[in-house]
Image (cartoon, one colour):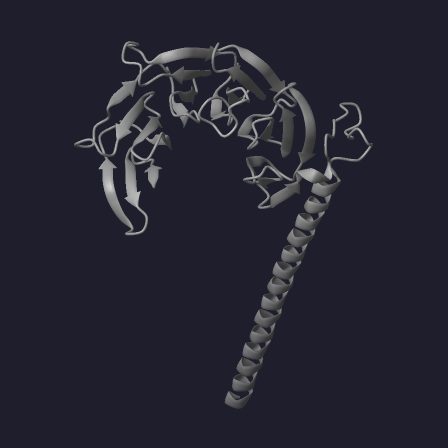
Length: 312
């Protein structure tokens, strides 16, 4: 297991033995913000110090095998492509980059410098397509999510934008391509969970939860989509309930006239009910405490009065 920490270190762990295999203490001069395995030996780290390091567990010492420089601000995320040949990164400088770390003839390692967002890019994800993936006939895209409220889908062979997906103005915190590489789920502040068709760039479903959406994730078969919200609720959506639903921008309904937010409204109502019940229990507990205090005070005053009567 690989971890990156605010203490500036990356650590490789033996999970079974619960011991440290190797600690990389001197790689970065600021907190490590993300790590990602390329294979069972090689991994990448990124940091607030604007750098990316490529490391090998089997190499001697704890230094990196290559350092990638090019971002001008904190590097928020790194992600290897399905075949392990390309590395994607994103930064607070508003850019994402596609690197070819194994191409030693390229002194910078940069294959494409992806410029198109207006604010910080929070995360990047590859679609499971292209050669060496589970879906070799599906194009390999890189998806980037930004605080400008948009998600860009980039062609990995040209570095050009295929789709620019924007539904709301709130920052997008999470993106998740479906296992078959045809859909993309996004989660943003305001509780929005959107599902897009990567073939057309059209939205096919949208739900709204209570609070902000912090993460979205598909089941291994793509049949279910889970999302978690700042209200403390995790929702699991059965995608088969709305096959080929097309969202109508005007009325928030699918092609069959079904309200796409009913399930989430029910979830929100349940969460609100639980919150109200918890508040009621706290209030009753508080009233009980006050009653006990009142009784104790009354008993104390009564005992003092009896003592004064006996003394007189």
